[in-house]
Amino acid sequence: QRLGLRPGQTVAVFLPNSPTYVWTWLALAKLGCAMACLNCNVRGRALLHALAAARAAVVLASAGEWFAGEGARGGLRCCRSHP
Image (cartoon, rainbow, N blue to C red; front, side, top):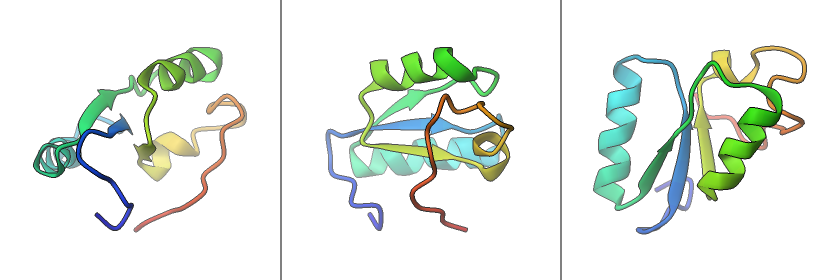
């Protein structure tokens, strides 16, 4: 809710397979948000395409995935980081 999510919005999730992934899925379901699962191995133009197709209001990503190297995000920037 701190991110301003409302029921019916789509959230793109760019997380590795971990317990955090499951907790994120459950939290989004409780908020009434759809989850667009992004493959952690996708980078560049393919990642941009997946994000555009998802039409997500927010992208949730681990620091390890988001900062995976120069050009990995296809030119996207992090606008807010939460611990």
